[in-house]
Length: 73
Picture 1 (cartoon, one colour):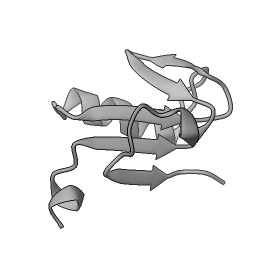
Picture 2 (cartoon, rainbow, N blue to C red):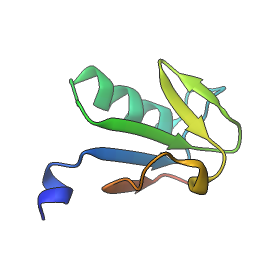
Picture 3 (tube, helix red, strand yellow):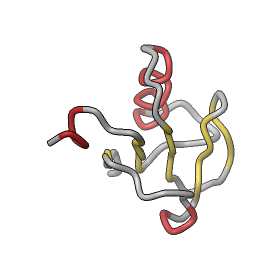
Picture 4 (cartoon, rainbow, N blue to C red):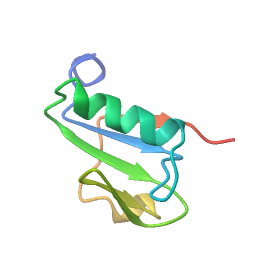
């Protein structure tokens, strides 16, 4: 349960690098409240959102995140 309640890294699936969507909002909210771990996004287009990298493939993440959030249709 430690990884769930105190994750060292979080990935959000469905985050957009080009337009505001729920995935992007979740990433930005975590950053704004002072989350100190690593944040990653996975979406259809690679890019950056306020310093958070958005990957197009989960296999490209530099680590295995402790928590995954899925916000896809």
